[in-house]
Amino acid sequence: MAGSYFGTDGIRGRANRFPMTAEVAMRVGMAAGLSFQRGNHRHRVVLGKDTRLSGYMIENAMVSGLCAAGMDVFLLGPIPTPAVAMLVRSLRADIGVMISASHNPYYDNGIKLFGPDGYKLSDEIEERIEGMLDKDIDLALADSDGLGRAKRVDGVHDRYIEFAKRTLPRSMSLSGLRIVVDCANGAAYKVAPEALWELGAEVVAINVEPNGFNINKECGSTHPAGLQKKVHEVRADIGIALDGDADRVVIVDENGAIVDGDQIMALIAESWHQSGRLAGGGVVSTVMSNLGLERFLGDMNLQLHRTKVGDRYVVEHMRAHGLNVGGEQSGHIVLSDFSTTGDGLVSALQVLACIKRQNRPVSELSKKFAPVPQLLKNVHISGGKPLEEAPVKAAIEDARHRLGKAGRLVIRPSGTEPLIRVMAEGDDQQLVEAVVNDIVEVISETRSAA
Image (cartoon, helix red, strand yellow):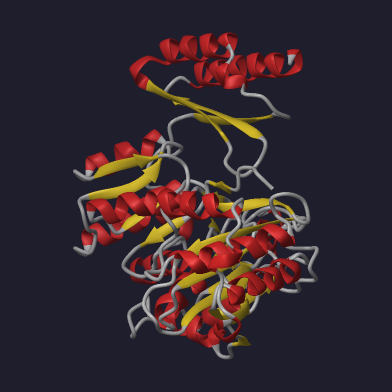
């Protein structure tokens, strides 16, 4: 079974193919269960999933492994990833597990693990678990009388809805707002519309009929065209698109235009800064965030801290440096006053709070800065390490020289898909397009030659 398991966001792959098989899932349950046993109390795990078909297979396999390690498993059913993170702490569990491939199609799945503090695991802990997967750990498993139990837990949706509502001031109502929410036929298909309705909004919910195959299918945060059309159709004040596990959000304004994730971070950061809530004198984002965001924050004497891609790294930097707003351009927004991970619904509620406080439309509120021209292209690869090839290295070095200090270049392999992402930005749009196209062409030629 030897191989590599963990990527930038847990373990992910095609369902029923390595590493996303029932066997691997069971062994992950065993290894994670053994890794988080402390003291002699009954150890417990909270386990949630999204709505894809393979969730049943992975869930049952993980339950077997966790029970074999002596862990009691609380089954939450379909529920957002941030709800799992919250319930780890609320139910005083030793581990949290979310079975989801986030924004990927139904035929993929994944396993995300949370520690007892509700945070995603560090690289070191993941490496420790990964090191156990290919070893014989049977002798370390529980005795026959120490096996774990599994049971369904009722009321978890209500717990999460109340948690989300409490992130707004008690006196704030969303009455008067017409909101379209696209739940991507995913984990938030029940909780997101209900929470918005309970806060007083008029809610138009779309893509809330999961069937195991339609999660993220031409809907949700990665396919917002349907949401844009619906916002126009019903003359909504705002559109909210979540992804399959609801840790990501895309906002659409009243005109049907998509609001970039960097603009959402800028809006929340400015609002919190003005109210004295923003901690640490800045915001944490990744190398992919636009230079315009950095300049906007600088004008307020705030700093943009950049990390490598992955909301886990954003959160680690936030914790280490005492910041409470962070996220990714893609829509993973982390507000650590409320949550330990990205939360699409809670982030959307903060945008809605700005609308209510300032009584201005989304189209005005969300244009905090003029984005610097930026271009991202993906190159599919079937194997090998093209970034280590001499022609590719030379093309990258040449591009950096051409951009100079007025631009940025980010080249990285995807942690979840067989892609190399090529991104450049700078004040000269033609130059940005030229350097990206040149690098993509060289990578494609190197791939073809291989």
